Every structure is written in structure tokens, then in C-alpha cells.
Image 1 (cartoon, rainbow, N blue to C red):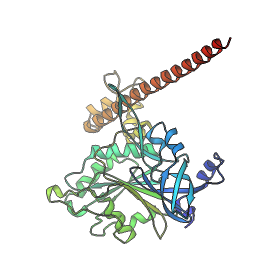
Image 2 (cartoon, rainbow, N blue to C red; image 1 turned 180 degrees about the horizontal axis):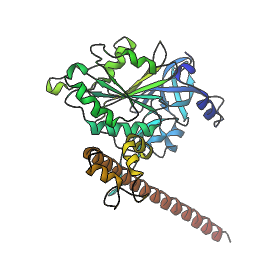
Image 3 (cartoon, rainbow, N blue to C red; image 1 turned 120 degrees about the vertical axis):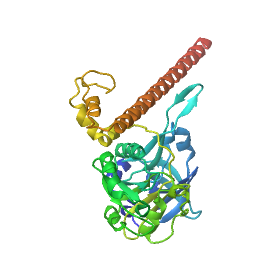
Image 4 (cartoon, rainbow, N blue to C red; image 1 turned 135 degrees about the vertical axis):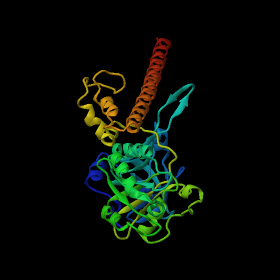
Length: 363
């Protein structure tokens, strides 16, 4: 296995030049389970831990390695383990907001779920759990990641009104390839292989029980990932995957399985919003004011489109809800930034006082 087989290309080669670490080798994170990692190298796969310097230098969760990251490691072949010293800059990443609290104030923190992916298969199940608003949220996150979204509508064998649902789904999946399939029945899977060229990385994303692990198992031709049987209630699948893991296909291409997400909070979704809600952005061109927020402003073309039924009211409300989340997250981040600046200047002031007191003592 070569680095190219693992997704290495000129982008990461250029990023490598930023480090002067001739004693370290390149590896890609293939598994993350809490604080335990596994990395893939040209010599094989090894368990890995984070170096103490990297751990102490981390200022947020985003500074730690994620599945798909390219890292520089010190490999001890005799002991069969690696130590991760650096994380190379990411080309793409799926992030979500994981808010923590400082006293009474919420502080935004970024969690990177997977990194350096080319395409993301967003998997939704064609049963009673299908939710267009959830699809909009996921697509916003994916577009913002820099990767290409592909919508997979799984469990078609459980749906009797696909022809009625497809137009509704395509209205919210603007510019996205949509494929209908039934992984259990091996229907519609062949088309997915065109996204899996050698060295390309595809991650699967979606709620619990939509069939992500089943799709991967069918593609690789064996039961690599555990699968839970579909429950009787609403034909809903059960959570099976508990951690993120990468598999390199013998035929070329790389797949990453993800645990199902009950919810995903937006991190930095401005670009994602523009692409996921391109229809609303198009209406907004005709608003009277360029900074129109599409709430109560006069001459708002978006609200006019809702009133004339050109734009579904549910989609408009979903847009406003996601925009409100982004505004709230920005306020949390700004507050945290101000607190960090305040702490930094306090530390500088203390150092200056200590230097002054020391100078006065010896005069």
C-alpha cells in the first residue's frame, strides 16, 4: 500500500513542507475511539497515541486528530505502535458545534468528525422517519465542509410512494446527485462505485439506523461493520456503529463509516447555507435592501415568494432557524475570543509587574 492509495496528493505534499521533521513519517488516521487511534502507513496499520506536546498545545477539540487526518508520527516498528506529533492542515472537514460552558456563559468549540474527504454519502431512509428538514441541515453542513454531497435514499423496499416523494426531496437537494437504493436487496449499489476512484475518500453520514454500515458491507463484499436488524416500530433501524473507522478498498477508494447522529449543530455554515438554500439566495437578489434578513424588512422578495407559494413556508422557516443558529454560535465564539484576549493581557500585565518588582529589588 502506498501513500497515494491512502489519498496522498500534491495538496498534502505542499503542506508537509511547512514542517521540518525528517525523523517523522506520514500516516493517515484510520480509526478513533475516545483517546485511542489507529494510523495507516506504507508499512501497515498501527495503534497510536497523541504526543504530550500536541495534547498540551491544543486549544480546542479541532486541534486533535480526526479520522481521515494526515499526521506525522514517530513509528516504533519493534513495539508496533506510533506517536502522533503533528496534524497536517486539512483540505476538507465535517465539523459540528459542541458547546461547553464557562460559568454561566456558553463557549463554542469545534469538533471535527472526519477530515480530508472528497465525497460524502448522506444516507436517509425511505420510511416514516424521512425528514426533509433534517436533510437540509445535513446538506448545509456537508456543503460547508468543502466535500461533494451525494444523497442516498436507502430502504426503497419499504417505500410505496417513491415517485411522490422524489420531487419533494429534489427541491431541498439542489445541485446534489440523488440515488435510490435498497442495500439489503442489493439494488442500486453499482452506481456508487463511480465515486470510488483510487485514492479518493468517501464518508457516510446520516442518522442512526438508516443503513450506512450495510451499504459499506455491500460495497466491500464482506461483513466488515456490525449491523443491527431493523426494528418493527416504523421500520426503523437501530444504532450499530459506535466509532469512526476507515477502510481501504482492494478495488481502489476509501470509505469511512460514522456513528449515527441524533443531531448535528452547525459550526461555520455561511457557505453551506448559500449552496443548500440556493433557491432562497436567488429570490434574495430582488430584495430592496442588500442586507435584508428576510424577517420584517419592507420589499423583501423572499417573504413575497413565500406569500405567493413560490417558496414553501416550511423551507423558509427552516432557513431562518439555521440562520439563527449560526448567529447564536457567532456570538458565543466572539465572547470566548474576548475572554481569551482578556486573559492574555492579564498574563502580560502580571509578567510586566514581576519584571518591574525584580528590577526594583536589585536597584
